[in-house]
Image 1 (cartoon, rainbow, N blue to C red):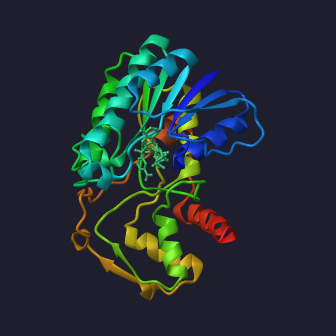
Image 2 (cartoon, protein in one colour; image 1 turned 90 degrees about the horizontal axis):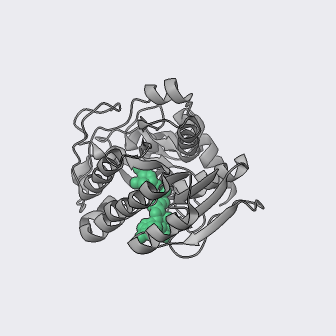
Image 3 (cartoon, rainbow, N blue to C red; image 1 turned 180 degrees about the vertical axis):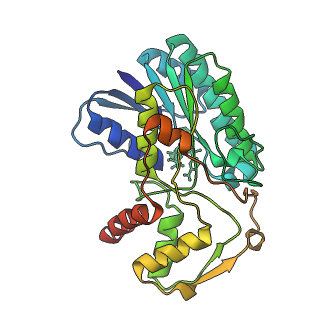
Amino acid sequence: MKLFVTGANGMLGQHLIRQLAEEGKFQLHITGKGTNRVSYGKTSNVTYHALDLTDFKKVQALVEKVQPHIIIHAGASTQPNDCANDPAQCWKVNVGATRSLLRAAQKTKSYFIYVSTDFVFDGQDGPYDETAIPNPVNHYGESKLLAEEMVEMSGLHWAIARTVLVYGNKVPGGRSNFVLWVDDHLKKGLPIKVVDDQVRTPTYVEDLSKGIILMMLKHVKGIYHISGKDTCTPYELALKIASLRGYDPGLITRVTSDTFIEPAKRPLKTGFIIHKAVRELGYVPLGLEEGLRVVLTRHHNTD
Ligand SMILES: NC(=O)c1ccc[n+]([C@@H]2O[C@H](COP(=O)([O-])OP(=O)(O)OC[C@H]3O[C@@H](n4cnc5c(N)ncnc54)[C@H](OP(=O)(O)O)[C@@H]3O)[C@@H](O)[C@H]2O)c1
């Protein structure tokens, strides 16, 4: 089975590829911007291709050359503020590249799995299940929703894995994430301001990878919400990290979203209802505390 994965160097990409490589039964063609930052042991079934997703001709040519059975499209412009500051680039990556991949997939008749986000929703009435009506409040969400719609109308066998506030251990060359940011600041005794008017279901990246692999193995069609099962505000999450680590909770100041002037508006109350994934895929994510323990222990050991 030949797989083509975009976003290999990203947080999800690196964990997903390690899990896929461990399965040992796939021929993996993985793509990322620039040099390969993914470590996947000594397996010889992985080929890395440097590929700028905005080079649409190269994207199509590579897919047609590889002839994958399955495409997992995880690469994206993922920062809402970057998308607000440069909507044209955001559109090029999130919409344009998805269109190119879909055109190529129509020729190779590949099963297409697209990774999307809770930011397709406006955050008025989360947590959301898969039947909820999207209504994004920023460019990032709009670009991801448009890409979703193109996937759904592609005529391909398709699936969409939406996820929420992903956390995990840092990958080589990768960005930090909220959990590691809180841990790093509190460890140094630095005060932080954290919002208490947004709600999420934080997702452990290894669970997200497992969920996507389950979707792929079951060859499902449609939208699946793949997130953690526990709901919290970022402030509550920060307090939990402090409690697990024995840090001073007084370092955390509770604020509302309007404290921060940011280029991109955030949806307030998102988070996902994951019953469909549990029922149809056998998806069982770790509880929030369990996931945090794993990540914080590893983060501590690599300090
Ligand atoms: N992280 C979250 O909390 C979260 C929440 C909801 C949904 N998602 C979705 O999950 C997916 C994976 O995100 P992630 O968390 O792994 O984010 P990430 O770490 O930012 O990974 C995204 C990857 O896309 C790559 N990329 C961006 N522009 C590119 C281009 N022009 N050509 C080639 N590659 C390009 C980035 O390359 P560089 O590394 O070289 O910059 C990066 O490796 C995305 O579709 C995202 O929308 C993430």
